[in-house]
Image 1 (cartoon, rainbow, N blue to C red):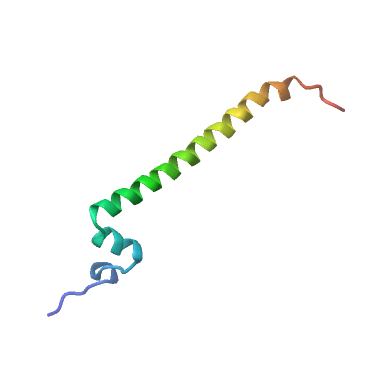
Image 2 (tube, one colour):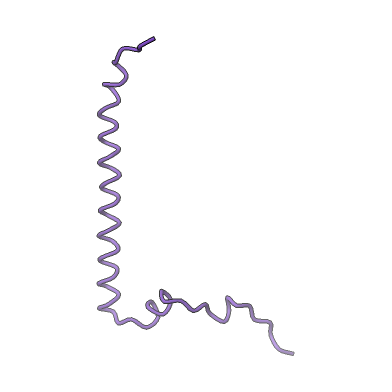
Length: 67
């Protein structure tokens, strides 16, 4: 009797999987550093935009309502 194997058990092939599996430690560290730097940049952008909106909120709340 042969065991049933799904595609998941056989291992999916992708460039990312190959990179994780076969890249040298130095290459992985470089890519991780770049990915983290970009993630930090985007998070800081979100925080900056949120802070700008928060600072505008009191001005908008005190503005007269035109009826």
